[in-house]
Length: 340
Image (cartoon, rainbow, N blue to C red):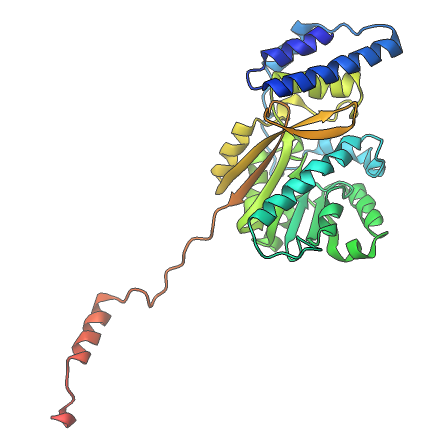
């Protein structure tokens, strides 16, 4: 089994040397521990794995919503487990160690006006697919005014209950059970920042999702996305290993066909008025339970994009109609009779 994992790593043209080495060490340690525990290996057919990899396409959505009803059912079952740091969402808890600084430092680099104690004070953030509030809360602690939305009502109840333990967060964060498209009309160009972390690989209609993000984001506002690339490596490690073998996340959490290559995401963003500023690879170590930045985007990646500035408005006084200009010129050159 280990040789199969490594063959995918070596075959990936995008994986850099440090990424390969680190990932190989993780898999070797994991394999040794698993063999010691079970006393056996788990044979898997490489042909069977690849048969799914090369034929999968992102499902075409005929609905008028970005919400996938199947995804709702999956997350409904886990709504009460969001704040168990060693449970099903342990990897998301530890992801805060890199995604929160990424958001904070990127925003601070774009502005010289911030408070030392509350660096994100005055910034309105929309956390789309907020779940139990794992990312909303640290952003709120940095001073931001956060609105978290999620279509799963039980997720919102969990998030509301948890923020209530902190009076400061209770004032800075508000949650709403809603899809993104449901708030568009009431929130046109309302937010300075949108965060969609580990969300786009679950939506039914990705292009509609991006369009809605553009509609509720202010001109020159920032969009932050973290998600999973659609590669051979992400299938083996994200589905086979993470779900079926190691149980890092519950089986069935992800569908490889809905994973999004960064090139596809960039194309959708740019066609909807965004400029992609940065794309960074991310790697999760299941043994240490920690995330790190890597050059390769073959597995997970983070992206920052900025919405285009509002078009300049022309003012009526800037250009006068030719007849008006001629009249003014004629008037200026005419001497009143009374002065002759």
